[in-house]
Each structure stands twice: as structure tokens, then as C-alpha cells.
Amino acid sequence: MTNFGLVLMTIFLFFGTVFSQSKDEKAKLAIKKVMDEQVAAWNKADLEGFMRGYWNSPEMTFVSGGKSPKAGNRLWIITKKLTAQALNKWAF
Image (cartoon, rainbow, N blue to C red; front, side, top):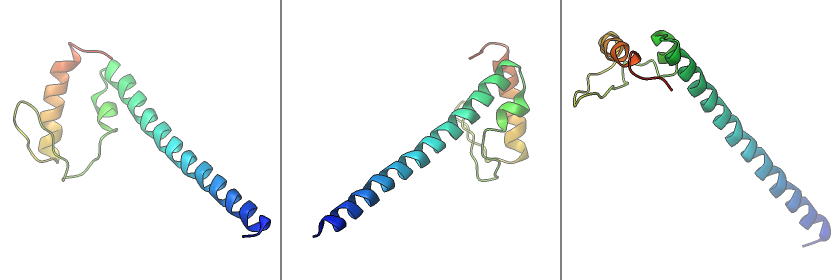
């Protein structure tokens, strides 16, 4: 392999690594942002704000006390009731 080929391969490997790390870092920052927003909402007793961090889909399942109802409006009602009770006890 020529020197030019080695240099070119090194450049591609370097930039491939740099770009993959930036995607990972962006994902980590996005997740941390959602979690920080949830903490702030929880500490303000803002349940709607807290729940915005979760996937809003009928396929989501909530598990509490051995029960796991499917999502949808029923999930929201159950979660709201349980979380309202917990908000009086916990803060992050």
C-alpha cells in the first residue's frame, strides 16, 4: 500500500471515530435534557410536564404494585393518581 493510501485510510478511520462519538454524545445530552426536565417538573408537582418525557403510545405499559395495565387514557388516569400520592412524599 502506498503512503497516500495509508494516510487516506488513517483520515477515514479518524473521522469515522470522531463522528460516531459525536452522535453518541448528542444522544446522551438529549437523554439528560429530558431527565433534567422531568426532575424540574416533578419538583414543581407538574405531572403533565413530568409525563412528557415518556413515550406517548397505546403500546406503552406501566407496571406498579404487580399490575400492568396497557397504556392509553387508563394508564394516564392510574399514573396521575399514583404520582399525585407520591409527589407529596418525594423530591429529587
